[in-house]
Image (cartoon, rainbow, N blue to C red):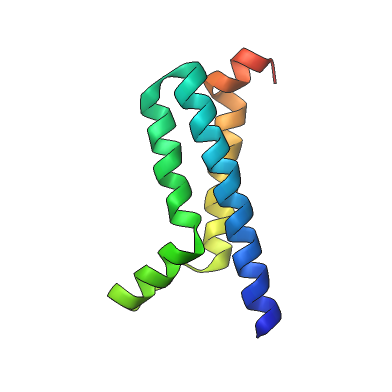
Length: 89
């Protein structure tokens, strides 16, 4: 149980850091609107958000949904996003 909680918090923190970095880069290099979107999207992955969501609604976003959602958004961002064009990825 403890290992699963650690894994969930670790994955959530990594995804938060990735999307926060993407948000700041988009905000500075591309346009503020997608930057704000990614920064708000990063908030979904933070462990305190999950705790707040569980406290308010009794519902928690499962880890597998977070991983799939994060990978799909990350793939779309790096495949066709403006940052990919800037850095030639």
